[in-house]
Image 1 (tube, helix red, strand yellow):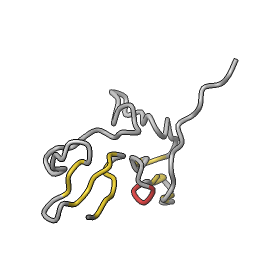
Image 2: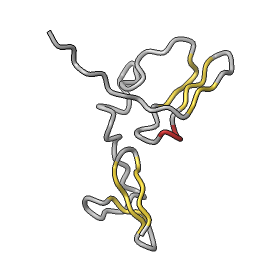
Image 3: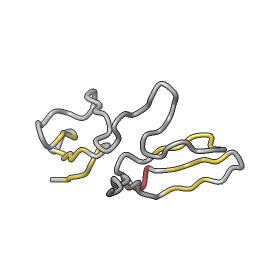
Image 4: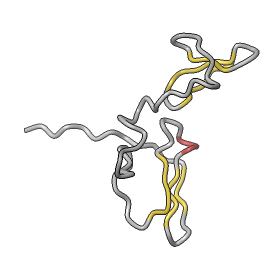
Length: 92
């Protein structure tokens, strides 16, 4: 049985289709929000994982999948293959 993750959710291939591991629901037609991001998008297009990025055309945190993360800058530079770590709260 093949196993992987989709937007941070464990999934498996049952020989016919990919399913979510926790409830066996098919992944096709049942898109879940990213498990790592509090929201996929806000009203202001602020990315909760990457923050406000200047001079950026578009970007994606990869939703837990390193090979899907990228940042495309206005000058054509593309940075990809990174993971986003959630900041820890500062101790007072």
